[in-house]
Image (cartoon, rainbow, N blue to C red; front, top):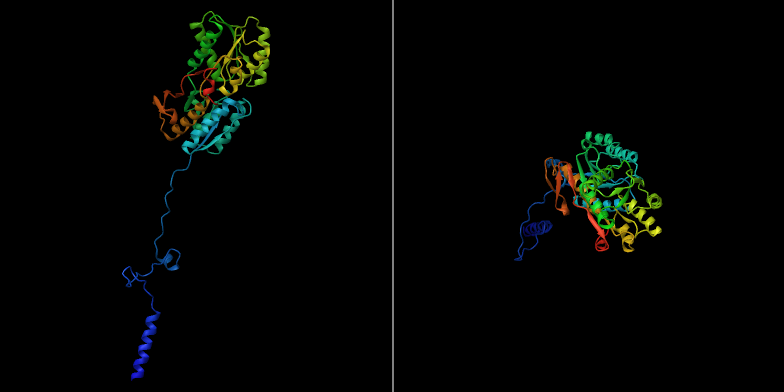
Length: 364
């Protein structure tokens, strides 16, 4: 009997040693652990768990915004590209900035057709021709794409908003006042433009003539048909060289594109004519700095081109999301603050007069 009790005792001890060992608690005693729960990876769990609902997406898909200048590769539109990409990064949108290598509206049309086929959410374009571009912009709107023009406008019926650098009247006033201040209110002048189909330049010239008649009736435009540079700096230099020879009584030249003005400055510098003919117009400060420093150009006009590109994207995104709606009189455009809205025209501000006194304050 004793042997039987010993055997049973030994068996009990062995069985007790095979059980799970409980870790000591902080007091040194053991505690009973809850039963193990099978994980998602275990087959048993897969058989018994209810289906897991898919997690909601963290955010909506990013907008795709296409921004098209009149042409790529010139200082002015390089500056607007910088501003457009700044705004795009702030919104977190997928931004495409691209355009033709020359001021070719047909190339713009072809590129916009591609953007339509790719399902862009918004397109912001600076048209080379306000009329020729209308059909493709209408096609974009028919596909539900927000269409914004900037720098130059198209027919209002073909776009949602126009992001305008300045009112046309303010640009005309700044140019003509600058000419009068430096060449006299009876100056003889000519105008060099970029393209005869550029809507913004044609509107500026019409406003310049209107303002001349009102404010400076003794001024004379020696060539009512503007000289054309076709946004080619070398051609602008040649045109200006010819003008200096053809018009001996010339007092001033207004080169009203960012390519025409530096081209004209090259011709005036080469001819040593800066003291006889006052040259002004529209261009970026970086490209004009050397001509201002050496006295070839004393004053010229522009706006902040970086801010214009920034505004174009601000308007495109806000119009797409509904933040900018019809009837608004002002618009909160990011770091630009509140900007003026006139119907469907959003205005950046007033022109800037650049001279030796302030040109080093700007870098674009």
